[in-house]
Image (cartoon, rainbow, N blue to C red; front, side):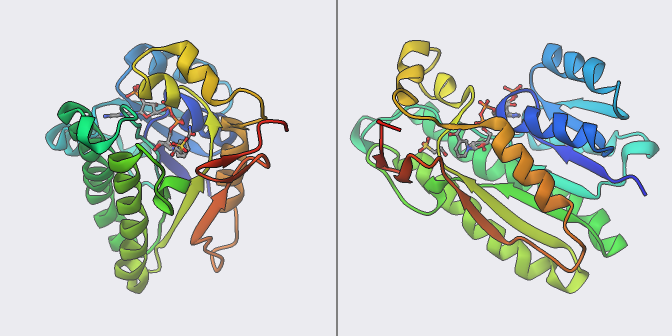
Length: 251
Ligand code: NDP
Ligand code: 8X3
C-alpha cells in the first residue's frame, strides 16, 4: 500500500530533495514549511509523480502545528513516516557574544518544534501500532565546535530525543532513527549568516560538500528497509570532513 510521508522543512535543501526522491518512488506526501510560494511550486512539480498535500506553519507555533496537522484531509491524515527535518542554525558566535533572538530561534525551532510536530503525530502511530520517525540531527549532535554552542546544544537534544522516542515507542512497534549529516551545501549557511551569501559560500570552498540529494538518497534507503530493520543512528560526512573542525580543503 502507498505510504504517506510528512516532511517538515520541505521548502529547501534536505527536505526538498527528500520530497523529490520520495515522490518519484510513489510515496504520498505532506509537505510542510513557512514559505507558501515554495510549497505551491513543489506541489505543482511533484504532483506529476504522486499525490501531494501542503501545510504552511512555523514549527515554533504549537497551536498552528496541531491545528494544521489536525486539518489534514482523510486521504492524507494517516502518516506512516514522519521526517523531522525543519531546523536551522542562526549565527556563529562565541557564547559571550550570542544573540538572544538567535538562541530562541534555534531552541524553539530545532527542539520544541520537533517535539510539537512529533506530539501531533505520535498518537495515531500508537493507535495503529506502526510508524517510522526519522529525526534529522547533525554531526553537531555528536560533537561541539567553537562558536557552535547553542546550535550544537539543540542538536545534542535531538540526539537525546531520538533515543528517548525510540525507547518510549518501542512497545508500539514504531521505528525511530536519526540521520546526522556533516556539511551539506543547502541554504543552511545562508540562514546561519543572515543572508551573507559570500560568507555562506566560503564555508564549502575548496572541498566537495555533501549535496541535499546525498542525504535524501539515504533517507529513501532508510524508509524502504523491511519492517524488521530500523536504522537507529547514522552519521554521514563528506569524504573531506573528518569531524566538525577537520576539513581537508584540498579534496
Ligand atoms: P535549509 O535552510 O536549506 O532548509 C531548512 C528547512 O527548514 C527549510 O525548508 C525551512 O523552511 C525549514 N524551517 C526552518 N525553520 C523553520 C520553522 N521555524 N518552521 C518551519 N519550518 C522551518 O537547510 P538544510 O536543508 O540544510 O537543513 C535541514 C536540516 O538538516 C536542519 O535540521 C539542519 O539543522 C540539518 N542539518 C543541516 C546540515 C547542513 O550542513 N546543511 C548539516 C547537518 C544537519 P521555511 O523557511 O519555508 O519554513
Ligand atoms: C550542521 C553542521 O558543521 O555545518 O548541522 O554546522 S555544521
